[in-house]
Amino acid sequence: NPLIIEDAQGSCGCTVPEYPREPIAPGESGEITVKYSPGTQMGQQQKTVAITANTEPRVFNLTINANVEEAPEPVLNE
Image (cartoon, rainbow, N blue to C red; front, side, top):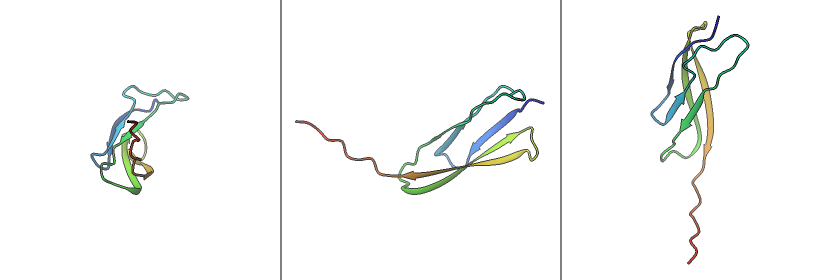
């Protein structure tokens, strides 16, 4: 049977997944992308994305780890 991803939910508003809306045939592949916007969060971060699909179990979690560092100040040429 094809894989049907019914939903994908990030653990917070800063974690936004995008997932294939079309069934994925056996032997084929699809891609889930996650946009993470940390805001003021710094250092080691761990977020999850709950995937609901026609699988057993119906819901499983993807774990995303990131090390958030402060962006360097831009150098302005005068």
